[in-house]
Image 1: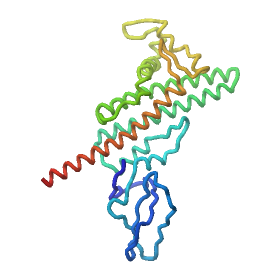
Image 2 (image 1 turned 90 degrees about the horizontal axis):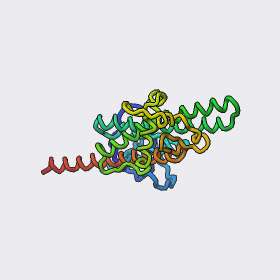
Image 3 (image 1 turned 90 degrees about the vertical axis):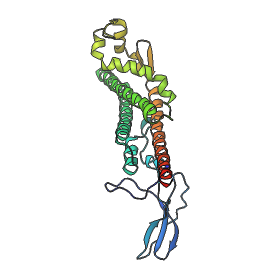
Image 4 (image 1 turned 45 degrees about the vertical axis):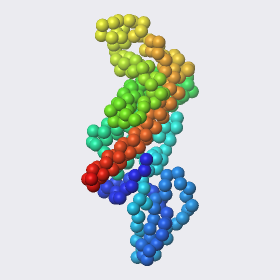
Length: 274
């Protein structure tokens, strides 16, 4: 989604954009921003003493994907998205309740990815070690994976709320729907691991076999698969696929909300002129 930015809010530097010349009138040098994905012909804006740089209406365009491209990709191809959301809404206007919720969702996704990447790094290191350091490393990476699942569960719930309450034109990604139930069950077990240690699955039901299965994770080290009761989650693939699709959902939501505000603005203008 593109938006015209007539003026930038005061404050910190947000991001840089490539500008190209489009004409001159006396000491006025007219320029425009290079569109996202447009081929750069390496045109140079040349100025003389006393020249002024000006944008005509519609020539200063900010693209959400252009802002997003500033975030480098990390492990699994995931790039942090919270800065994209923060930067975009330093320029665009939005309701406070949505803004805070949306920013919180972006931060949760970034946190889940950071823990996911750390767990894999710790597991790879443990596989290279031997003896006691190896066992210690395995326990460490399992603890990190547990926290990743806890945060991922919250991110999934918020993504679901996003599609139902704020962007009903969007759908929860299929990769999330596929594993959401499993992540929820594992989150409950990891978050309430003390109850599971006592054989408690619910407040009224006690099943030692089901409860204690959360402590039996040999497949995580050997096959990257977390297990709980009858549930299985491929940590390397299932989690990163869902994170990447949730990240794309964030970008789609930016476009969706911008389009909504544009429609509302046009309708209001038409009503005022009627």
